Image (cartoon, rainbow, N blue to C red; front, side, top):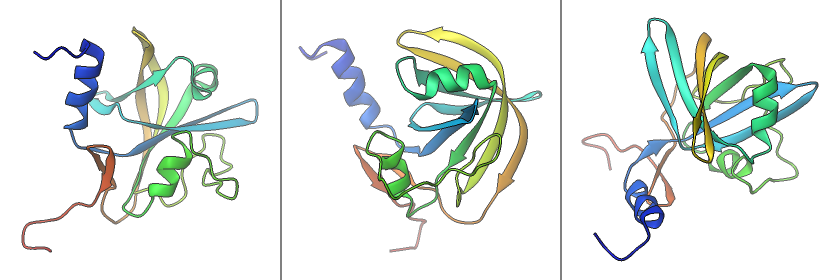
Length: 159
């Protein structure tokens, strides 16, 4: 192992892991919040469960914690601006969340609506397990993130 602190070594290792880009959104008392997250995965099909990891100091966490419901929105190619908007680089003229009770992203590749099923401590984060209550699908290709940049899915034979 190198001389780098363990946290930095882990950060460097995770840069090498490609993933899709998702935005988690919730609303409580009229306040809607969304955040681009890198930790998202399915947990179970029976019952249908997914999990997201949310840093405790984000603006989303208190809203999600009180709301008890949230959406996970998978971003399609071309939605880099939306990802950046919810990753701490807000664009003043960009308001992609719906006005629904559980806000979702307009133009999402898929939206997974969840009810909070369990919350676990995870260091600086909270591990939120959501029971899936509804799924809405659209057509397209996913927005990917790898090595600190957005990427496009290239299928075999495509250039």
